[in-house]
Length: 341
Image (cartoon, rainbow, N blue to C red; front, side, top):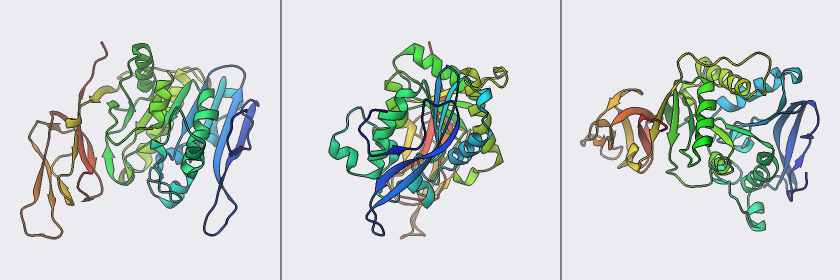
């Protein structure tokens, strides 16, 4: 593949059959001046057809993606594929190995590193940027369908959902909603970027690709239910795309509810630091001005806790998971039903 990248791919993206390999990413550490980080990659190809590109471990404290994709890589049979599936179970392997959201090597957020243009300095300034550049130049151009598996990680609880942005191309949005409905999660979540730019899904959406993210629970909900939703959902989406042809796709009898959080008021940040005590469970109805919880001061433990109030009506879709909270961190998200006209 003719791109300018320091990353060496052991796999051949044009070769038929199943390949297990790695992306070799050059780096330098305090213990080794010359070193490589190895990112596992699996390519399954058979005949002509569309390509699905599926990532896990974009954030290292979200293990639903890595576990699901490692299992899927072993399970996939080339004879049941029409087209190609590319699996990258641990996109941010340094973070996955450390159990941290950000890379343990450079402190960067992998999911804020995807841009249309990179300077040579930007590509080489960190291992995270080097990986993101390779993804944009070598992998995403191959894909018709892009899936980026996320969960709430250590800090957040989500109602299980497939997510996307409200892109301006209505045909593309309808295709993404249809693919999202094929996953058969209880919710499809249309969200806004409130913590910066450079998201992998945003980059793919701008290219017009059918792009799905997920938010499958959170760290303390990791278990059989969430892993089952992830595995069944990916297989369903691949069947709907006619890439996995082991059996016909069956549309869900009850499609997931499409909800949206498109206003800044939907995203509630902690007004002070302290221990967040929630008052509501996920899925509860919320009215504007209603107390969602309160924050107890560690320094002034017997003072009155600071209330956290809803700034919009809807249902509680996201809740802070780890109680210790810093001022400005998200503690809740409310959503409302969405209809594509």
